[in-house]
Amino acid sequence: MKKLLSVSLIVLLSACASQTTQPEVDDLNSGNNMGNTNLSGSGSGRPGYFNQLQDPNSILSQRSVYYDFDSYSVKGEYREMVLAHAKLLRDNPDASIILQGNTDDRGSREYNLALGQRRADGVRNMMTLAGAGDNQIEAVSFGEEKPRALGSGESAWSQNRRADIVYRGE
Amino acid sequence: MFPDRIKFLFCALILSCGWISFPSLAQLNIEIFGGGAARIPIAIVPFADENRLQQNITSVIGADLQRTGLFKLVDTSGASPHIPADVVFPDWINRGASALVIGRTIAMPGDQVEIQFRLMDVSKKTQLTGLGITVPSSQLRSAAHRIADVIYEALTGDVGVFSTRIAYVLKQGNKYALQVADADGYNAQSIIEYNEPIISPSWSPDGNRLAYVSFENKKPVVYVQTLATRQRHAVANFKGSNSAPAWSPDGNRLAVVLTGQGGSQIFLINADGSGLQRLSRSSSIDTEPNFSPDGRYILFTSDRGGSPQIYRMAVTQSENPNAERMTFEGSYNVSPDYSHNGKSYTFIHRNNNQFNVAVQEIGSRQVQILTNSKFDESPSFAPNGKMILYATEINGRGILSAVSSDGQTKQHLSVQSGDIREPAWGPLPKWK
Image (cartoon, rainbow over all chains, first blue to last red; front, side, top):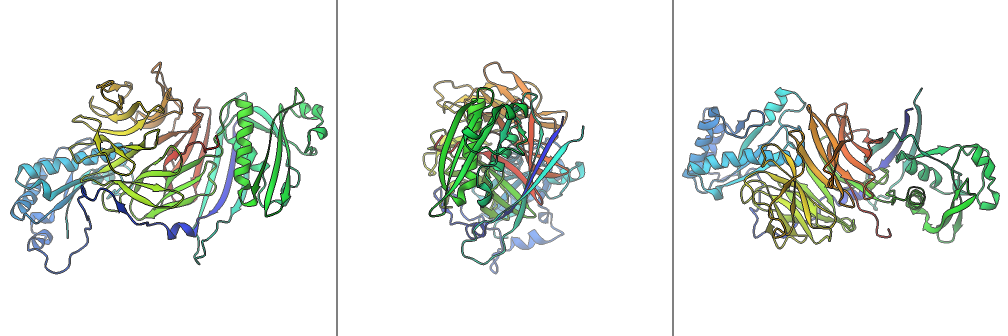
């Protein structure tokens, strides 16, 4: 016998929630902190390399490394691009980037976060070996939380298995 | 046989703290499937004068008991005893009831309500238990949950979890809300709302705080937030990613996963963010830590053997420096969560591209797979070990589901618009 009970209710989400949604952040780790990760534009006085980063003819305008399923190594076709960014960092000690690792959405969110981190760490290691400073790079992971392509299936998943290079102040 | 389907509709008004605003509307639906063969037939007679209250009590009790899959509600029409002297036991025997709940409600001054209830054993014609409680009329639902807990405990011998709360993440469009609701899905409230993802909520053992991971700063950072005051602080905001918070049973420390020293590794940190200490030391992924109830062990997910599997390590490493592999079947076993007594844990097992909730008994290492859906995630044990709450997907939408620890009964909890995910079942309230 199949017993099916359905209870429906309407919950009016409290207005209290919207008032208290963004409490002050009292950061206890400020000593260890990378600090502000604000990626919004910094207005005038931008360093010259930003022009290159936005020039569609420059390899530096490419910012994404895509991966095969269950793979974390940078494929040959992205090597030149990653090394070009490493050179920019080496030549501009004030420049700094965030490497954001991403995965497709199959499986555990926390485990995927660790897999995305492995992708970002791999790009970072390639860059530091090429002379970029460790302090110029923060490798973080978004796991499966920020898919570029929605939906399931290989075409979406292959878009989401990637690492993005984002310049601070850009 | 036709499935019989009953549908209730309730409206819950929640205070709007003096600001004029239009509250968002979300509908939570609960569906129940299955149920064991030997369900306890119980008759719950509407309490005297409860129809004058703003909240019906016996319907809440009945719904609580039915959700467990252990009870069958017996029709009470035409009979309305409220005190033992009025109970005609042969009538209830004829109706097939083995337990009978009667009671009454009395309006008291100051908007208080006194509720007196009795649980009767029909065949022995005796009272099994009873309770008198007085609550403000705004807390009638929670009083009903307490009564359901007493009934459940008297008839099953296990602690009831109807007075507990759950936390989960609700995603609607680009908005993420960390919400806390009663175990039956009512009284949902947002703790925080952001346009960036929130994952991995974890209840402090006293139920007063939640740890979680928020991406509001464009990277994963671990926060601890006190529910009563809404105050919060970043507990782990180190270079790299910070995630997977899990409370120690004493509530003083958290296990977290940090990447700043290379790879994803498990660390211990005090709940105020001080006293960082590295716990795991591998060149692999070590994540999803979960403390045993006695605080001695941590279960975690690691791919040190080539595929993600569940391992157990001692928190005090001098005790046992080596982590012990727990799962061997299949190439993907993740997201461990200990049961209340530490004798078993639930986790996600992948088989033929299907992700299912499983339970392993630690003593025998025996594994039982409890679900047959496709995309189950984040299993979380109820604090009495009888149900497991987890996230799953139906028609492409994220919903919560709960399965009894024997796999017999399932229930679905969904919202009309949006995805619910990342559930965490809160601890027993303090009076237990």
